[in-house]
Image 1 (cartoon, helix red, strand yellow):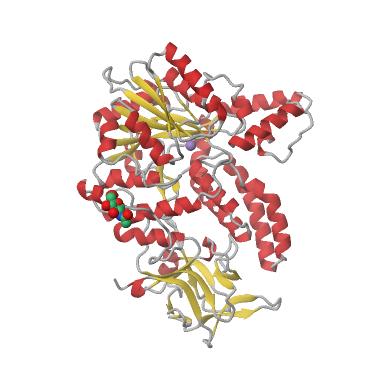
Image 2 (cartoon, rainbow, N blue to C red):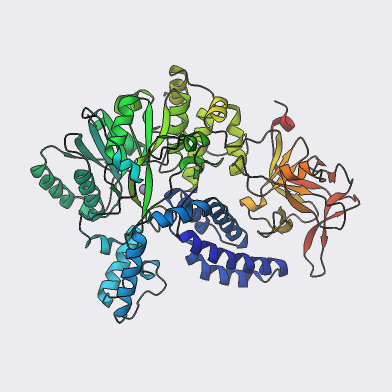
Length: 633
Ligand SMILES: *[C@@H]1O[C@H](CO)[C@@H](O)[C@H](O)[C@H]1NC(C)=O
Ligand SMILES: [Mn+2]
């Protein structure tokens, strides 16, 4: 459940796009026209979402965009929007910054706007009206390089105040005077210096000095110059004021997020480590809840609540409390609060969470004992799910602490990474192979990767398997049932991937426009709208695999009359007794068990193939992957 104000905006854009997509798809307008429209709206799509969702959007923007992918991201946003709606209103009312923002906006309107040099740049949508041309150039340049507004960051005070986004009951909490000591670890790679300085300043100003033992900076082989001598001079200055507080460790080659976090933990000496990104500002009272909870139970891994620092204005938006989850691709996502927690009626109580987003705090020794972070996770992504499964399966627990709030800068774009999806896919398979037992197939299904000879090198996992045995960890089945019942496995999938009719092999079965429930034939592109999952029980899903237990997959259905097949929510279709069970073997017909009609393809008057239901002829279908021996293990 996410709180995103800009989701409104995305939704509006989204709806417009969906309508455009629908019209275009329906009439199969020329590909060139589609591309033209897409390139103009591509910019709109690259909106700042939280890090994990940003990755999804990012991935999409890296792919050859066509209408299908557009639909997919819009669908994603809409799904999130549904979840968010209710909390959005509530939190908006609570949010104290709303008024100031409006006041500021009307103030700036009085100034005569200068000419905009970069009218298309997201940096200048809400900011920078008074800049001279030289200043605009400089700001845009820095923005391109870093993915956020370095020009503004360099001017804002390092000790600026941010809204206290805690629930009022957090302010009444008192803590023991004998709390454990804290090492804060800041990981960075090509971050702007002022961003790191502001993170350090917020930590020094908002952590009681008696608790803060050290701040350890870990540089994962940055290339920008200001992080060399200038950062070292800075550290000297800080240490003159606070002797021995700051330490700097540099990697001599790029090692990725997981290993940078490990380096920080290994350097740390306090009882508790908080391993943070460097593009954050901690909020007031952030440390005490962490230290008190870990003192109470040293096996708890803590996730803070994130707020959003806007990449352009640096204003802070409050995000709603949610737990951290993931889907079968192992992308992170926010999930709704558990009923057991809501029943407690204590807004300050720790919330049990299936996963972490990345930033964490833990007992230093306990984190080491359970294997820190998996150094075999490369670049970025998946390392958070790996740690989460290990923590839960090996005797720890994960909690979100509502009174610990950290404002996190969400980049507009990650300037250094080209395409993260190969690393994400590889890391996901690594997690699946080490931790997910018989459920690992779900990750292969979601990514549409063959179970055998996947061609993906997830590295050597023997030491992590040995660790799992040494720690006598529980099964993934236990985790699903006891920790994350909201994640839905699908049983009896025997075939998956793109589905083609041998009559015309350049087109694939496709879920069709969203919103809408009419499958189509469309040029094969390999993305999730063309994922098909066939179950031994006869259901045939079309579209991305749904991981949420309370959201239905969509089943191919014969409505019993007319030619057009439909897609219906599977469990509703089953309850209503719709004709949703099919007989199918690769290279054979696709035949409805109830109506005995076959799904075949036929040219429409404009000369394009459409899927139709008709008396079975000779048409046959193939599907990309089958599960070992048609599912019999
Ligand atoms: C994997 O790593 C272990 C040590 O952790 C080593 O003994 C083994 O030979 C490695 N396997 C391969 C295939 O490299
Ligand atoms: Mn981050």
